[in-house]
Amino acid sequence: MIKPACEDAYLIQSKDLRNSYYSLTFGSFSKAGQCRPGHFVHVQLPCSDVFLRRPMSVASVSRGKKEIEIILKVLGRGTRMMSDLKKGDRINILGPLGVPFRLPRRSQTVIMVAGGVGFPPLLYLATEMVAKGHDPVLIEFFYGGRSAGDIVEKPRIKKLGLKFHPVTEDGSLGSLGLVTQAVEEYITSRKGTVKPVMYGCGPEGMLKATDELGRKYGVGGQLSLEAPMPCGIGICLGCVVNLRQGGHARVCCDGPVFDIGEVIL
Image (cartoon, rainbow, N blue to C red; front, side):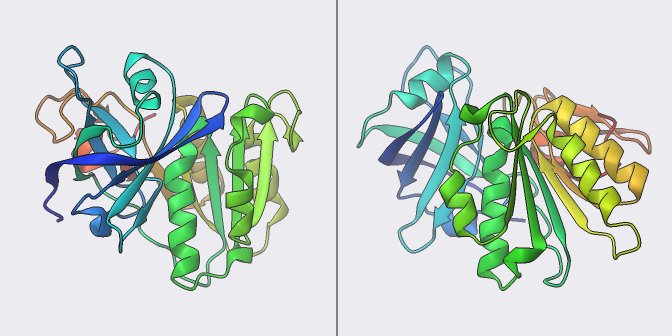
């Protein structure tokens, strides 16, 4: 288990990805090199009237520079304040936290199911897999949103050489419909072949549908859950979920990554 650090870091770069999405790179963070796909960090803003930290998935790291990238969407006061940060502004980072993804075998076909702001940890996972020798043509990256504006960092995803499947509810980019509908069509088209492994991160409804697909078609894999995390270290019990085999788990420290079928969604 990685021992997290709690230390100040400074904004190195801020990029407006449009449609309220932002990429923020912070450094130096001593534990950047130990962050793995699926890990998250707990961010404390430098002001006295925002008490609780914000959990943020790791989108990428620069191990040599000890920098960490977060991609967020402005959804409330905390994320708005983060999007307004200027180069050189300071925040406090606690991390890396949580349980990361297990990497698949290099020969496995991989389905990634990303929805909305759930795509950063899957972007990191795909990047790490390719860097470790996984054939990118074996990665099927399904990315869903309400409209084309919700599908960000398209050139960056395509640059990895994987198979990119954008899906929008209004049909303004890629396939029309829900991303899990496109995933189900892909799974059923592969009948008679070796089953792929599936990874998902996104809104609760999308994760529930992805979990159901995995159980329906016998496709294993992992899901990264989103939940309120006031403490981030398992003390406050603000992120408890029910397990299918009975009992409970804390998303912040027993997750956020769980096996498909493990959690009642």
